[in-house]
Length: 245
Length: 370
Image (tube, rainbow over all chains, first blue to last red; front, side):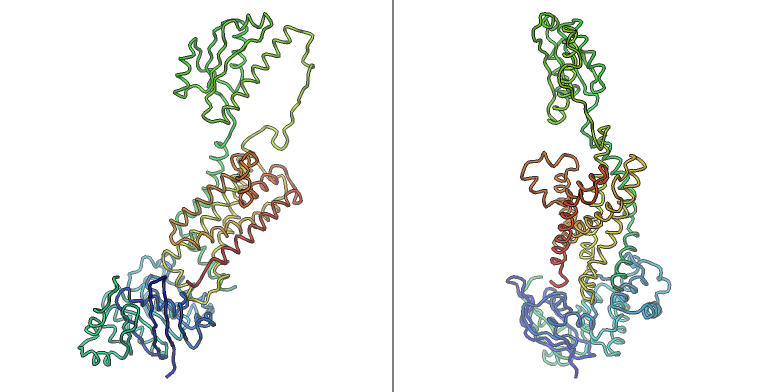
């Protein structure tokens, strides 16, 4: 299988604090990879490094087939990112946000127009079209942010807690979008705190105190820890954590 | 280029959707020009004067009438008690007291040197020396009159005469001096504050991370972010110059093109400062305070209110790294004196060097990757 992300001995230190302690893992093209861990385990730090907005202290990194040190620009063209913080512009309308990010990624006017119509239709945003993003419900904002993150059809999309704070129906719809994207061949790298979502992933890793403690398919991990759900697996591992959030 | 266009387009949309922006762009220049130009003046008119005339003679009354006739003085209290007037000064109702002693006239008639006493409220030192200067010219004037009465052979032609000519600002109107300075203040504030705050705002709401993940290049981001404020500041300069013409009748004696060309370069230095502030701060509050800190010091040093030549040597040295000083000098020279490009070449070179280094420093400090 084609490897989308390869991480070898990745370390990130902030002074004496080791946020990421020798991470090693591979993510395959087209899979949904769940990146789990308690608050403060080091997930966001790792995602930021993989997206090229933070530099690792040491380690070998390949993202979308490129060395992240040497080909940062090529990596950036091949990835999408939806951060924990809300990333659309509140004071612009839906269409203006789509236009801006489409433009930044170098899409032509025609494609931007096409994408705008497509998203508005898919997300049933017809009645919200002219509204500024600030006035949209959170669920719609999150779905829109995801759509914008994949507007340039990246090989990999990184989602940092995309469903935190949204209702169960919207979460389900969100995961349907993730599945659709993965079905198109996009690799999805997602962090979450919802263990039912972990079950939807092809493979998951669980981070504890800056280290990856477990990695495998949800059923493999459940067998390994003789647990009936991912939640039990997670609690079993996360209990060992010594870091205080 | 396309990317830059998309950023600029987005910035302008956001700028004009911000309710505060239109007042800042259109109302602030008018208010600043009017309020500061009329109020920041060192001229003193109607000094509140108290007189103690112990002599009650023809001569003493004549001297007092000189004060009464002067537009610089307003006689507000007449008393026989110095102590009473001192109390008034303590309260702040009097700024100056003139005491004419007994035997003032007698001394004049005997050909002795009569003395009068002048007491000045010197809390504001420069105002005090100005008041004292006014007072002594009135006394000297009266002195000359007495001399001429006593010795009619001495005429007004005797002695050295000094006819004055005030160039560039013949009426010594302080507003002429202030208006070009206020214009400098205006474009500086627009450039430094708005640009820095704008970038930090993206940090605060988190969109900067999203931008940093895109293949957007550093120069595209910086140009896209700064150009809108460059345009707004240039527009405000034009707007301010029109107001200066309409309200104060002050117009550019030199070349209009020169003013705008040098302002264009100067703004790069100011925008560079704004960008630099944004690279070392995380919140709009921090950016505001830091920009304010630089601005207050630079503005005070720039010679907007007080001449730079009278500042201590260390302050003058500090002024060599103050971009506002150069632009202030340039604007006053070209607007009030009509200086040509060669006559302000020193300022232009300094501004250009400053713009280049400030912008380079800011660009170097600006990081897409932590």
